[in-house]
Length: 387
Length: 227
Image (cartoon, one colour):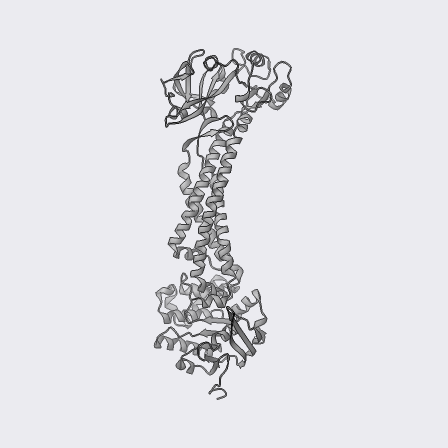
């Protein structure tokens, strides 16, 4: 094998072209890991925030709460009769009906976007527990025209700061509180179920949520309610429900990431190939010496491939450094499952970084393979003569 | 013993055929210092490359110590070169990113020696060429003469039987050339290396024990042959 120091110093000698390639690969890796971090942030927000002890009841056949409708009377019946639903201190079921609708609002930065508004019943807060925390102001009073707004929306959407009045159709709703939530609720506006339904001129809520007794077999309950004669429902845990809501955007981001990876990756591969070809042409003589000395083509091939791999690794490191500041940065994107604006943060996880470095190594490998092959199949006499 | 038997080498450039060696037959004794002379294009370097296994004859045989070099291929040929031949070139051809010591250690990495042993061998070779005080210098920090001495140390590091030198003094001033030739003489006399040196310089050729004159790919008369 050729010594490692030979490879390392050869890279260092051609500092400017090495740096250029490293940054080319680095930029590609940074962009791709940016998209991956966005996707990670989005999926994490949904899948990490759902709880297993909360059940979501939808109308049979619906895939999300937007297209589910529950008749109030059936919802009431369901909440009161299911033994699996946990009770509060006074023996009332820890459950509530909720309505949910995407409303078009103006962004503070200009333009419009869909924002989710949710109406809940008084015990809804108890069901969701710590998932929803009011950090400024107070909770809306039951039956009042008051709302609370997710902190992430307050700055992004007009009329959503504490004390503002948001007009829904013709009903003015006063923002009395700002809340935080790690999950998708963190991009919503919450108000009283009856007042929101009235403001939106809708009769029925969309779903029932309930805290389940510990040890409840939700799949078994789902099976039982699927064809229930009085209140048929599709039942799943909150975690399962939220996970099912990420598919659309998650796939879109993945496709975007792959497309960027392919297009920018091609450019980076060409840069790497070009750098390695230039390196080989300026070191033809050296290759001749190595071959004449008795080094076989395979070690020569591996040595140059290793050099390209090092270029990739350096590029990957630079790319990760460029992508790291994105971590925690908040942004919004359209969730195609609910057609509402979802605010979430980039998450540059170890998984994202590992993928990024592997991607960079592949770029180096693909870029270096052809030049290394060319170096290895040189004939020593010709390489020595080309001085 | 190096034997060339009816060796022909033809280069093809475009549609043109150029016969560089034309049925050359020649026996050279092992342990002797040969100078190969002749005008440009007479086939000196081609002959050197054939003996060193860098090139292959179109017809005829090249045998070194009984081994048919022209018949070796791939890994076997690489190994044969590593074991038997040391090359010294006009342009020194040291690897610029490696120090003098590392350049000399390079061919030793093809041997089963440990790193410490490789270092010992390389230091010995550099001492032999009088470069012990320049171990950690890079080629660009050395003079031409010094570079060539390091190149000779590299050629002898694995203790090959044959040293092939292509115009080793071509780029050197008189004094440096003299040192390099003295070194080759010493390697021949003290260590019984067979040396084949291509040169244009009659004064350099005088230092050899035998002179082979080539002309148009054939043997010209050697005035000293048999003397």
